[in-house]
Length: 184
Image (cartoon, rainbow, N blue to C red; front, side, top):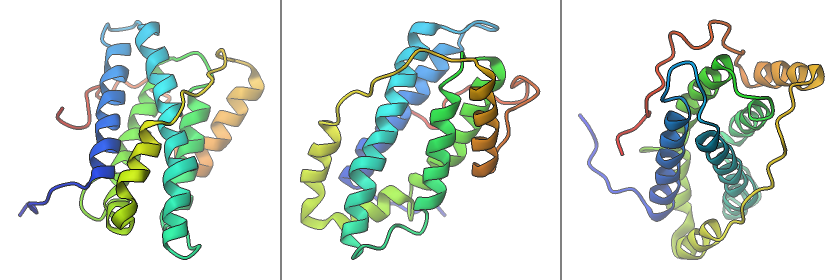
């Protein structure tokens, strides 16, 4: 039976950003075999900003509220963030796009919903929720470097994915649906 609950301010804001990013990624791959680079560039910049909001604003606040103790899931989320950021370095290929989608589907499920990271943050925020939300909204855009397809980047990509428990999809994403993970 589905629990009837209203998401808190932080979860609403961050989950809505997930949906926005999902739609940008979907737009980037809407035409079979081609990448819409304008949509992908917006997705790339948006995802890096979202990761920055969590790493620089949300996680430190939660750790402070927990008396210096990080969220139990923080290490896993940081591994995922590193893998996602590394996946954004090379020129997007079907395998990279499929891996991003798969990783985001798993990652976002850890953050959203009852007992997800965002719900826990809303529970801990108390009277600071509004000021934290304002800080998240004010997070600046992130500088995005040009793509690099060097051997060093690809080696780093494979290692970073492995540390996070993933691998680059070798099948070029044929079995990975490129649809939004949540209803808008």
